[in-house]
Image (cartoon, rainbow, N blue to C red; front, side, top):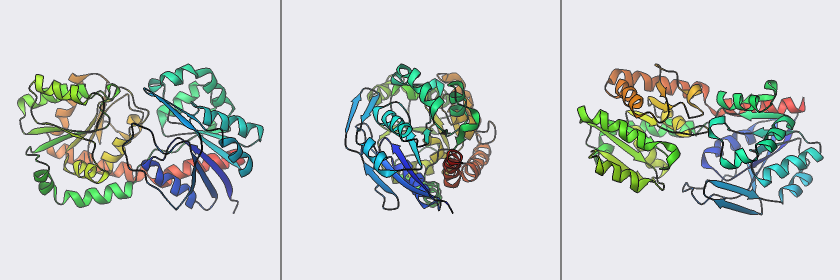
Length: 380
């Protein structure tokens, strides 16, 4: 069996990517080396998960961080690619010096380049829009593109990619860990609610950064309406961000009871919150994917997301495991939340279907196979 020597350039060591890198490294036809541009970013509070099951190295260089713009400069990637003599190079995005340099170096070495990106049209960053002409050039000159879903595929076709060169590798989390732990925690749901001082019967949950583009204020306003006539419901908001104090003040000013701001929590505690919840809501105004939806579905929750989340059209089957609504529309969000949170049987059935979807369609094998199909294509 042919074994392909593959280099993968990634921004930072993200815990949710570790299962993918380990899965690619275990593939019998892939000899994987991962090069990270940096260990982490300033705004990331997650635990760094080291692994001995795949080869990786943090490239020497610098990272410029200004507001939402993050730019990696790692000239050392040139020597790594020259010395490595790889069969294929996968670049994670095309918006910084390191991935652009990897693209140019690989082209000069006549090494096939695979662009891996979650990009969608509605979530282009300022930097992304600024370098749009360069991105289009890269898109049209890579050997293949790997994307997580429908919205990304459509975006890159619009950018000039040949549809046959686009391969879908759906984004995943550590399904086994989330499913296993949440199943265990649900057995003691009452105990955990007591320990967390959650006295309401029904729990609506949000997990994510507390920043403008996440749309949390719309969720709070929708919750106020549902709380007005249904007192035995609470809203738990997990995460930190520049808007935390402002959102807390909104709840005080509008006299919205039973909104719990937890701040950042550990992975273990986050799964406990998923396990005591009855409904998960992502009110985002802009998200290339939304991995918290993967996490919530692993924990058997019905889902409401806005149509601004890149994963919504792929992961949510309206009426089956949840709904997606228009972004920035608190009224629509309120009416949709009511359909689920006030009907225990509907919520239970939707949660069960969420788990079935995640296990069958958004698993490690599907993601690894998407990448391997792209590698086989560029070497075929």
